[in-house]
Image (tube, rainbow, N blue to C red; front, side, top):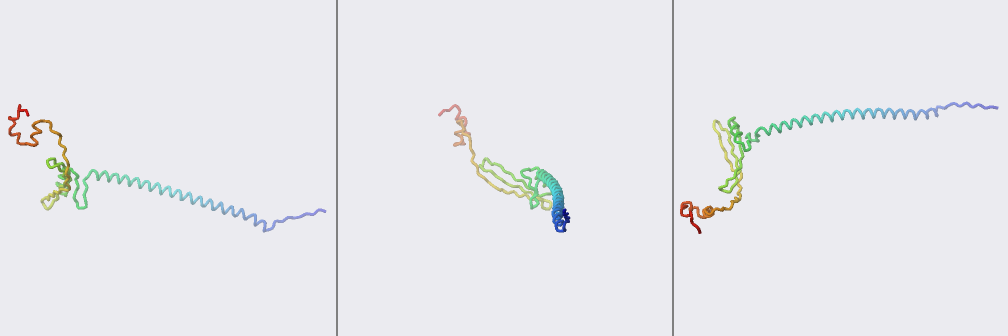
Amino acid sequence: METTQQFQPTQQSSGKSLLPAVVISILVTALTVGLGVYFLQKVQIDRLKSSYENEIRQLKIQILNLEQTSQNTPTNNNQGVVDCGNSYDCLYSQVSGGNSAKVTISERINSLSLEEKSEVKVEPISNQFQVLMTVLELKKFEQTQPMTKSIVGSVSESCPQIVNNLSSIELTSA
């Protein structure tokens, strides 16, 4: 006797076999969407980065142009006085144009063993000019004088009146 068995799948076993397929489908969809979002954001970030780099380059060029322009022209301080550095030509041209201007100079005064730093400011007032001269700094310096080798030169340092009687010195020995 032969027995035949019929095997019919139940709904429970078919539900179990569909579950992994559904999970895999959801995971693939999520992965696809996630990668799509990632790449879209990456493209947007790259575009923003490129745009910012271009803006930075343009700003650097503008700053460089401004620095070059400011080096070639005298500067105005907050009081409207053009600072001409140590250029009297600049001072003259600014004052001729009706602007207030100043120069700052430093000079050694050997006869006094001093170094002076001063400022000369010229301001137009009505149809006249006001000139303000200010000594900003005085520094004493040591003068190193070379040793005098000549006889008359050595004697004249301590006795300057010797120049009045030079003929009595010639051909004289001591």
